[in-house]
Length: 311
Ligand code: SF4
Image (tube, rainbow, N blue to C red; front, side, top):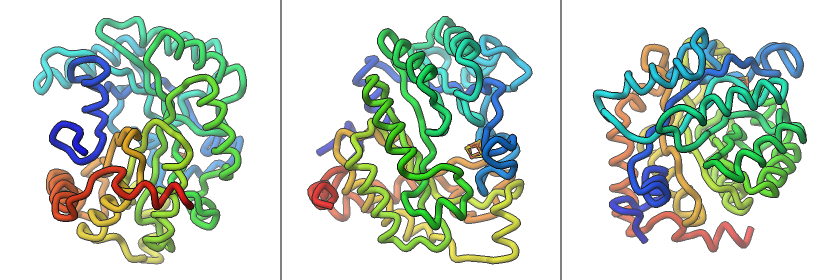
């Protein structure tokens, strides 16, 4: 099976099928904080979280959403002089505010010229019924997806990364979003310390069976402004090699259902902060390595999904 030239169901393919053209994401900073950093759940945050709340490429938070959209369009105009856009609320927890405030921000984004949809990154423990209803209402007339950072299904890893919510909370929220016809995208990290390849694949299979719309696969990055960096300095642990990572991603793609939209197959940390693995800086080599490995296996996304569905 092919999705244009790729052997997996890319977001680019999905957007072109839906909108008939290239769709560009604009990363926005809605001025939120995070309950896992401001003391409500914890004051430490996830161990890999940077000062920017994992959104190094987003617009500047001192600008309005309308101004950030204009600024981001301008920044991307050399590559894409014109186009249609998804407004992506990326930094921190983008549903962590009173519902009236959220509605105002989301509607401001949706009313900007050439914005065709909304992507909202958040935590599953930060979607109370009122917010779910707001998102459900918006999803009735707008293209919308919600991103949840699960990273792993394994309890010991979740404790290590200080995720701050359990798997039941995640499953419950995914079901509530699905009940309201809201697309769900799940972030997973490959290469967490202490996880075997089997552990990572178990997480992928679990997500494949959950009926989510999309997945983002990230390589574990050690970024210098994070607690993970301090931990890694004191307790160096083995990191995935490029070859290992490519092989695990290909296994993951084979096990995911063909309908799942793959938003990302590599991480995208800020280059100036990256301590390791340095090979990940050559993103094109990783992407072409994945293409080559799938071709070598003569396989594609979903080719082994039956193995995952009998878990
Ligand atoms: S949920 Fe996101 S913003 Fe909050 S601490 Fe974790 S990575 Fe950072």
